[in-house]
Amino acid sequence: MRLENQAGRLPEPPSPIADDGDEAHFCRTCAFAGACQAVGYGKLELRELHCLVEHVGPFRAGEYVFRTGNPFRAIFAVRSGTVKTSMVDKEGREQVLGFYLPGEVIGLNAIYPEHFPCDAIALETSYFCRFSFPAMSALAARMPAVQSHLFRLLSKELGSASLLAGDHSADERMAAFLTDLGQRYAARGFSGTQFQLSMSRGDIANYLRLAAETVSRVLSRFRAQNLIQVEGRQLLILDPAGLHHIGRSLLPD
Amino acid sequence: MRLENQAGRLPEPPSPIADDGDEAHFCRTCAFAGACQAVGYGKLELRELHCLVEHVGPFRAGEYVFRTGNPFRAIFAVRSGTVKTSMVDKEGREQVLGFYLPGEVIGLNAIYPEHFPCDAIALETSYFCRFSFPAMSALAARMPAVQSHLFRLLSKELGSASLLAGDHSADERMAAFLTDLGQRYAARGFSGTQFQLSMSRGDIANYLRLAAETVSRVLSRFRAQNLIQVEGRQLLILDPAGLHHIGRSLLPD
DNA sequence: GAGGGCTCTTGATCCGGGTCAAGGCGCGCG
DNA sequence: CGCGCGCCTTGACCCGGATCAAGAGCCCTC
Image 1 (cartoon, each protein chain N blue to C red):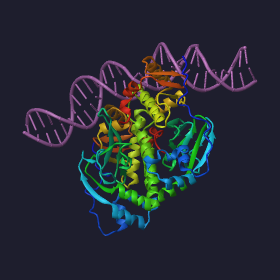
Image 2: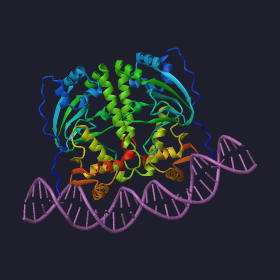
Image 3: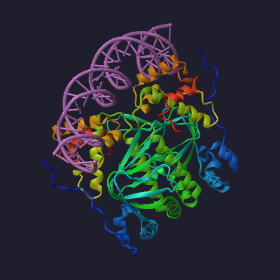
Image 4: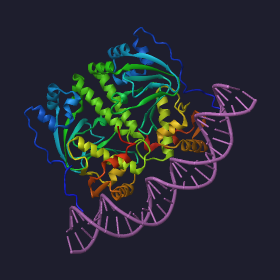
């Protein structure tokens, strides 16, 4: 059977950026501003951010958004597309650290590469807002709201890094992963029950510390239990509550 | 046989704090200032920090330094003793997130508890420097060096959170853990080859995502291979290079 | 000094998921 | 078109470490 609906797909390419200093428009198009009100950004902060932002893209699937060696450090807000961050250990093995959807921010952990070398790779054609770190840092020094927002983002990042920490079964990890993705899509106004898995099974496996075969097996099992419907990379969550229940020990709340 | 030398043990209780505004003294006794020069703190920053700091303790083994529920948020620098941070999931299972030695900082990840609820528990009698978060935040807004230091610490924290991420064997984890502890002790002027494991086997196991029995077994194996000497919680590393080699895939550099 | 409750060690057994292997698509390319 | 190459799925086997169980050393209390 086919999954007809394409909800969860992202508009590409994004609308061209107006250069008229319209904060509301900026807020909509630039993910970093994010939930402006929630963060406590006023017109002042938004105007400053607007001056700072640099719209970059497109990056095609497989292209580096930034790498460890890159001397020019910056923070990127995903405008459209999907990105994975990863680090390669001394043996050359890749370790996927996370996936980032539109509206999310990457590069925070790369501020001090001596502590945390990592790369960001586009998984599909993607566009970004870029903020050079020196400028961002200077802005943070001037504006408490911006500083506090940055700390908040870093803190959140730290939280999700520890999420995969515990020893949980393959089912738990996979259920939590799908639920988390759904919630993040929903938070950005997309469908939380039907979306694309923009990453390969191998990437998911690597991220969840499983074998690719296991990911495949678990997805098949979930399908057999009528929890989900999968066709290739199209996913439809049939029983969000059931899925959430399986992954509950890894999920917030 | 007995391990006679007590190197690696920490002076307790710490020397009383002089209230004379001597920055050098503050720098020595208050871990947060840490490597002052490296961080780029000048007299000005140190004086400000000195005004902010609040010396607290002792906390006895098992006492909470802070908990999720605690409304008063602060950053703590370990002056003496050892602390573990952990979070409890909805099923009530504990997950140890890290161990903190004198000179290290806890509480950064607890700044925004809604993102990352976690507790800190003293493993032995411990003393701290406390900086209330609002004051620290205000200071960071005024002083770029302090802000950058905080970001650096958070970034480092993020790095070590991802350290345990990969799927590695019990031997690799244990070897990396012991090597890391040794390096951190050495960085603070203690012996990096002979020190106390202030945490129980169970805590180590929880932290490394192993069973306590496995920790025991690996330690015995390492002893049989003449890599280490263990008697209770006293540890002597006989072959640092060998240990480092086993854990190399998890270790920085 | 006896008893109970820790932590730690070691042995025996078992199982989840890694690994190896064999196809089945879908797609780009010669 | 046929071929090769990824990616994905499913099956068979096996191993590392979890689990269960027993016992030893230690400290604290009574």
